[in-house]
Amino acid sequence: MEFRQLKYFMEVARMEHMTQAAEHLHVAQSAVSRQITKLEEELGIELFDRAGRNMQLTTVGYQFLNQIKITLNELQKAEAIVNEYMDPKKGNVRIGLPNSLATKVLPTVISVFRKKYPEITYSFLEGSNAELKQMIRSGELDMTFISPVPKENDWFNITRFFNEKLKVIVPKNHPLANEKKIRLEQLKQEKFVLYPPEFDLSKIIISSASKSGFTPEIAFQSKDFYTIQGLVGAGLGISILPEMILDGTIFKETKSISLQNAELSRSVGMITTKKRALSPSEALFRDFTLSFFKHI
Image 1 (cartoon, rainbow, N blue to C red):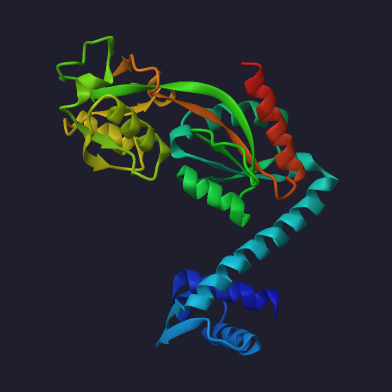
Image 2 (cartoon, one colour):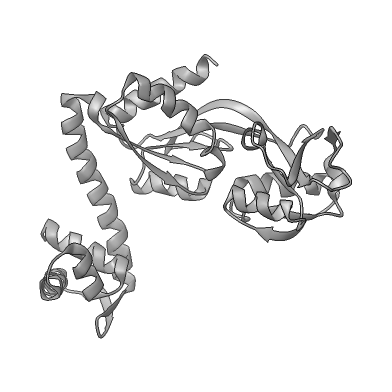
């Protein structure tokens, strides 16, 4: 089994087409086909179902792909660690983040860190909490910002930075738009625009509404904050979002209002893997981040 075969296999699995994979790899289609066939012969099993040049992973092919991703991530990390031990101030930091933290938390930390370590580069992966935790388990990530912060377990080291309040956003002409503070119960007749149900922020809101005696009527769902804000601004519903996103952000079509319900808040922090050592550059970033939030 050769590295080239695995590289070709992963690209064909991603593109699901032999010719397109070859074009992306800048090699002849016949070379890709030959290497995939050799890999299957060596393993003694078909990894793809073929329909012309269209390729779809078999069940075992999909399982093989997941393990290969882990292996290649570890190989790339091993190479990075060797290089970074020579000079950790010139390495690469891979970090995950929920998109609800992308507008404020990460840019704030990076801007200060970059002044101290200007030659370090960054790779960012966004997703839901569930997706980010899975990326750590698979080896795609070794650390991620996260909110709310989960409990520590066999996989994760947990650091909590702070708690953040949630606020309501309503259209600017909404009857509640001029209120300074409201209770969640006042929104039981409203249509909601929320993140998808797999996002923990939605779970917090739905759970709090249930404790307040109602189930939110969800009109729209989106993973993107600006889409949610746009739908609210168009009068298609109201939403509940983190204070950090809303404060200092100017939107002409919406108003944000504080909530009296104490439970409508979320913790913000970082998790790192217990299963692998961070690369030198990532350890540098982690230590800087922990110190940064400890002193603000």
